[in-house]
Length: 123
Length: 123
Image (cartoon, rainbow over all chains, first blue to last red; front, top):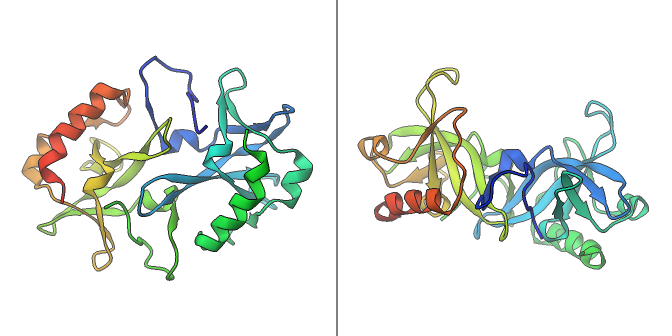
């Protein structure tokens, strides 16, 4: 779950800068390159990372879509140098998403929609 | 503790993008403007925000220093539109910090140094 070691650095490194997580590639278990981490969403009260926002498609930001993935669905894979999530491209087309500039409210209801969608995809 | 609502937006908004936390001003309880949030540091295993890296001093990034603050020391103040931390500028001069481009390893030992320093400052 979560990240392991995006930069593959030294032993004993337990923490990572949020800015280093952003930009990291995301693959599915079939090895398809799905996109990259665009941002993270934190719980205000508990300071926990709830969602990784994956950027998918688009060219130079045009037509780009953002898919929030529950943080627990992501597993860091050193070999690929990116996160792996157990979801097909077809499933992703049905997944909760929003266009650049149309960010959701990140309230409880939106959170539930994401969690419900990804429940079967936890790897 | 942690953030409340940096943008002061709608009720029911429980989560916030990491990129919106970055750039937010940091004040102390005397009202001194100390700097701004430069980045966040996450625990790889638990996905929890451990530290907010505060940028302090410098001009256009030259001579800038980064102070990691335990996330729990920060309280969001709507009136000031920034985080408040219970530490004086003099105390900050003695605090764990690093120069731009010389980021630490974020290992257990470095974490302990930060936590020990800020233990009396929790507000």
